[in-house]
Length: 412
DNA sequence: AAATCGGGGCG
DNA sequence: CGCCCAGATTT
View 1 (spheres, rainbow, N blue to C red):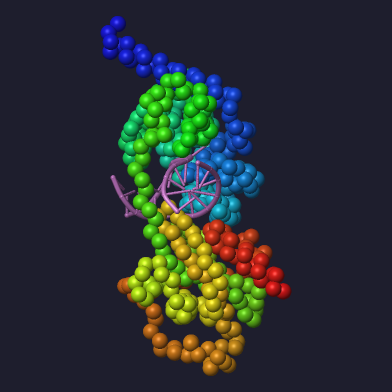
View 2: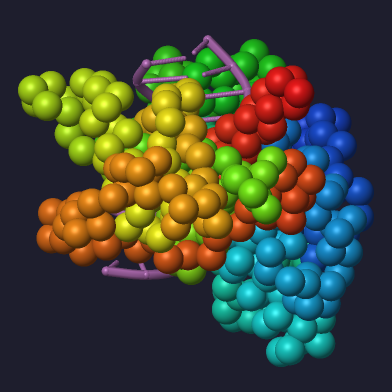
């Protein structure tokens, strides 16, 4: 046997060792997760969409609620979109929920409500990419397809000491070829789950528990002592900060005891979610970035923004500040309480609304080009605490609204 | 290839 | 407080 052939034989042994020991370990260590209690392709699919960029512990309660409310593909396909979004409230990446419902309609109409088990059909579902397709095909149908997520790339890059940048596209393709080779005959479902389970429980990003690892003795990174410097991944660009002025408008007259919310546009950030109205804060005088806008200037800007959006309310004072972090933006919301101008009183109290008397005041240019805000003109509602059940809010507004209603209650 | 899309947990 | 996570879609 040539040296080259011996080397190949050794590589093959290392792969066989990995697969067999990992599979063995999984059978003893796998967690009891709600979507593992049945082999229902619909459950597997829902869980995999929820698990995109989201931790298991976060997903569990959402998954249980979701399948209780939408037990079948058809019930999801036929549900009002607002109910699906409400079920997703707080989980983030809300396009996942809208894509999922769209895909449920695809499954209902094209496949008679049965989740398809062939590659092209699964890939064709909205919101299902390379990872999720592989996960559904392997976990639900035991098809020998790779399911490579960040977790799997971390495990493979360490065990095989691969220094490819996992943030790059071609790396995932390379990892998929490798992962496919490793699947033991007839064991795609268990093996792919084992790979992810190892990444979640043992081969963790920061301090991997190598001493508990079933494949430590042939882990190339461990043997080289470089396991904590893998995988190689280019750092993400830091999110840009955005200062915004938000209005907590309390109702008068027929709206007494209620708060004004509005719905975001059909597409883009937080699409179709509900929120307190808010607009970019003008830069503070004096230039220093991040400097707090003087209250008077903030009140004036908010007053003009409200009027331009067709909301008749008077800003009264600063209430609180809140932060909301996205992957690419950080909002700092300065929240001001505002009082609705009573529609009936308006014509009678011209003097009392002095700031509004200058009807000829030109509209403030909220954007440099003078265009209006895409958020302005969305649907508006006056709600009390009970009404919050009917609208889906991003977490930051959920917390603000709950806190407001708590405080309003205590003052009575 | 790069940007857009949330939110939380952890060392 | 920086870093990361069971990614897909759009540009």
